[in-house]
Image (cartoon, rainbow, N blue to C red; front, side, top):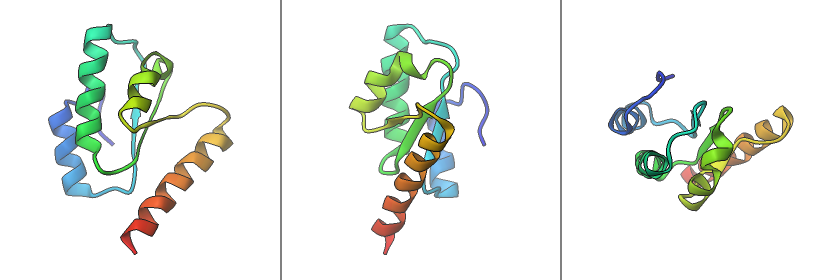
Length: 97
């Protein structure tokens, strides 16, 4: 787990070192539009080629950007989000075999 306001280069380093199956990000404060695009572009590049999902109280404010960059939005019931994550992890697992 990385802390709040993790720079994209730190995320990229963590992804390389840990090699997770999926990356979960949280947005709790709505960023200004110019910053939102910069952040989402950076995080999308840092996560590539792994699946990534964004949740948090302000995730809806960046949903269009996240979806356009290949990410997913954690929305709906906790069971729905769990199922989304399980499908995403399964797709990575299948790709590795």
